[in-house]
Length: 80
Image 1 (tube, rainbow, N blue to C red):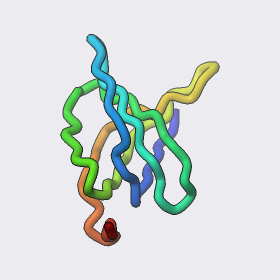
Image 2: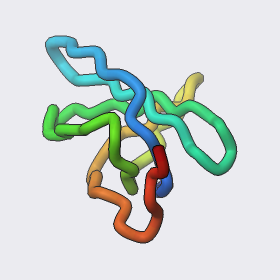
Image 3: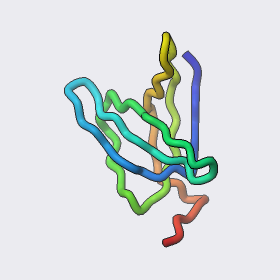
């Protein structure tokens, strides 16, 4: 397991399951999409804001990004 962090992310979608919520986030800089597992089910996101996230990468045969912290990205501004 190792740490990860990213900023300048846009919320795309959220799927709710019994054990966790799965968030899809898009990195504005690289246009990559991330699937983030929120086991605490604590993330409340708005599509019109940018976010910074941090967590752990749990890797066995696939990479799982497990959310630990999410906050609004105050350094970057989302332009309409």
